[in-house]
Image 1: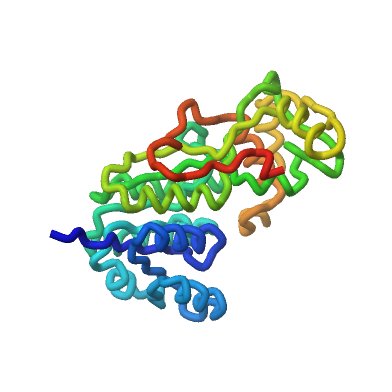
Image 2: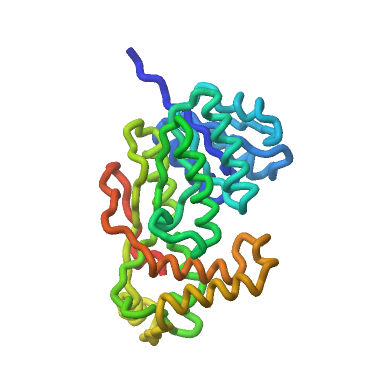
Length: 296
């Protein structure tokens, strides 16, 4: 008896990560659906269709349309990005639609550091994912969250961690040898695609293309950036946490922004607060993990 192709629905398929997940699912011979909002950018939708993705244009305010897009699926993968209206409200609509349609599995948009280890109030965007996680774990659908640490492209953005412009590397407390997890979007997408067709995938999977410490970043700057960077201790984690909370309270308009400055600082704090003690990189064969040398 021939095994049926897995049918995977990707929400957020027009986004950077979502497009990559669709591409990787097509590569492994899955049937891929993408739900897109009415009026989505035509060029992006056309590119998905040319890739071989079935497009379902839905009105997210009409639950029956969402349920219809979920019928016959093996798994729903969410790569949605946004604030409460997206990460909690829209994902909850999608979750309810998946449950109503009898979908067995759901991969939420949890692509981040392992926020299960991070207290509430330390990272606004992670708190939203925690709120959705409560709804997900209260449902009768099997869930898998993929924690990839930080996306590796931030190493090119002159963040305080690795600032090429100022030639500095930041660390906190005694964490100059603290390993920070980084994963490329391509590796994240490839791994997510493999997990989407893995009916036995566990509740949590933790991955990293590479792990690097502030001391190692200084050494790499000599080899790849033309000179040694200065290693700077920015103080205690407690002071950093208090600073972030003060900055957030002082900028209430930032609550309506996805990446206000205080949210960016919260991400840096999270990098030094938690990291993966074990990796699940070896669960799926054939993934070529990108080394740090290709990402700085």
